[in-house]
Length: 295
Ligand code: AMP
Image (cartoon, rainbow, N blue to C red; front, side, top):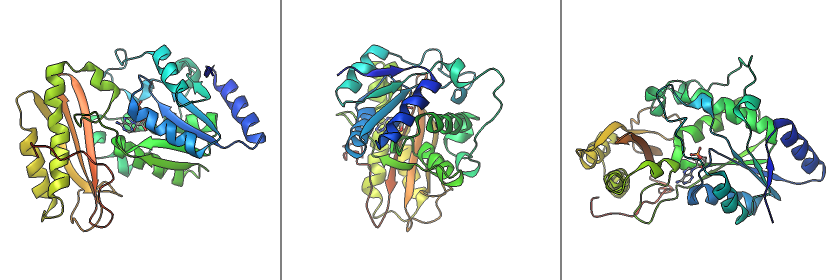
């Protein structure tokens, strides 16, 4: 099977309309490409739930700040297509930015409260770009299900909120974080890391594993933050934030008796990395970095 590449929003809409008329159930995985096993896990789950799988590859300019890595974001469309054919994904929607954002575009979709803290603080406008492009992709691809990784936990919550608030008739399916064999959370941006920086970056997953391991006996969010901060205190790591927040509101956690998320953002060299774990006394964590000696 060779994957069907669609470049234009109109053509994508036509394909989806015809699929829906035939009674197909469309599963959709939005990505920025340079795929890895994390992306493929979303596509495989889409394959399992839907009769047709569409993935998008679009490095969305409106979610990058002026000093961010839009122009050097890693890209390899041929390799991505070969990986998607193994799932298999039927259609890849890979539009031009000029077709997604016509010259006089001036409409934004913004989830206000959930995007204020965590990554929202250091990346003003980022989530507005994400929710706007995802809303547009939903209108173009018209999926029944859409799959998002818990790796980008704040993004997942913002999209769930947007779907509820704007009555999108789409089931959002959250998917657990996929990690490298050494526990580093998979990310297209890991390609920027030198072997030495990759080693430094493991402090993030170690801090996450420590939080997970100590959650049951921890008395407070502050105690978990202190523990993680200590592990992240290394010469070549610049921590942007380490926070424990309520898993629903993303407000600073005042109790560990409700589900919380420990979330970390840090720079290793110029590369900004994030990681998180959902911690809950009831159901247990959904993301399982293996306990490591550093924990
Ligand atoms: P991106 O291409 O980075 O925009 O990611 C596209 C989708 O893949 C988003 O829903 C991400 O949360 C998800 N994703 C990225 N990395 C991982 C990972 N390591 N495990 C699971 N999902 C991921």
